[in-house]
Image 1: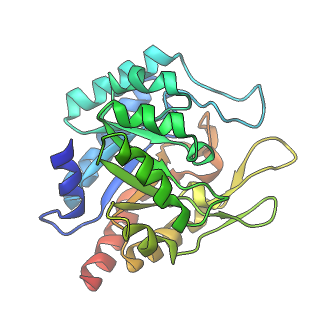
Image 2: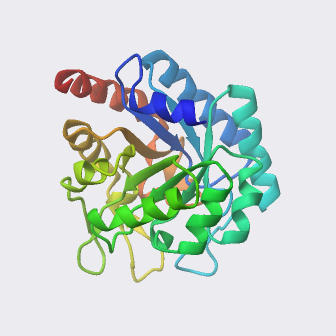
Length: 270
């Protein structure tokens, strides 16, 4: 995977790379359909691709919210996608004990933003030898993420990605400070813009996070213009009925058009 990480930063096409997929693994059929659709698009557009899907959602506001279909069942679906389509896969982990378990099935371990300062979790992820994607806490500055990078590298793993997902703005909104992207790139790691979670409206009185998906392309365009190495986009064929984070996901039918426009911006700044 180290060679793949190098390719993400310097692809023959000159394109950014993409982490995309559903928020959560809802079932095998829908996960496979989403993966096949995205891979068809990214192959056509020559965009390096990592399939994203959380095997479990452990940080829901309400106790009754969907959390998953079972750890092993979901992880085996991720494994099948990686094997049958020949693409890397990424999933979140939430506790140190999950690192080795998830690493047996996926290529990239993702540290959720709320947990990016958890030293034991970062070290456990690093020690698996997998690529570690650390999402920047919405409560942290970009500069402070250098310590997360150091924790992973000091544990013997040089394969780190940082992902921005906005900054807390009041109690129920987020805002993106694009100065953070080049600042985090100065740490010598690929930097990704999470174009969907950065549009969340958390802490709603209903206990269900809201969002502004109509602005996904706006966030993505600005990130590419600033020079982001990659994009993170959660997408679903029916966001309104997705079991997790549907309020801020991109409709799958809009993905190709969105990526095509972003490639034009990328080409213009190279």
